[in-house]
Length: 131
Image 1 (cartoon, one colour):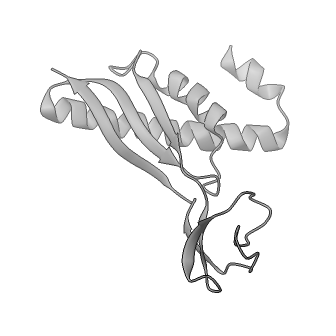
Image 2 (tube, rainbow, N blue to C red):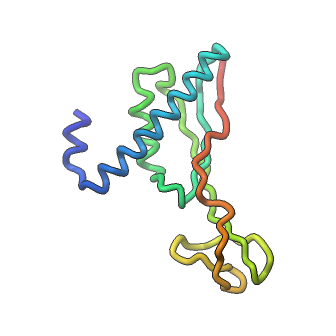
């Protein structure tokens, strides 16, 4: 049934879905291996995702549900922490949060930034397990 739904999407949306599905499957595999190692059951996975990671949060949540279905992780939660884009402003000599993905300039002095410090993350931070 999922195949017929995917066939109706545009090619870009299909590529994005496949990207997030691959990530979700990797997360499930990592969590399952760790749960088996410590002989526990995964309740939640905590990840950090930046807007420059190329990951669509809603698609990842949906794909995680599919990837964890009929596994020991079925029913577990994928908890996503959004990471803001942070740049280094050479003019202010300080870290600054960027308000828009389209404009990599200092939010204080408007100087263009050449160094991105955060915002590209796709990181598994922790697992919640019960024994």
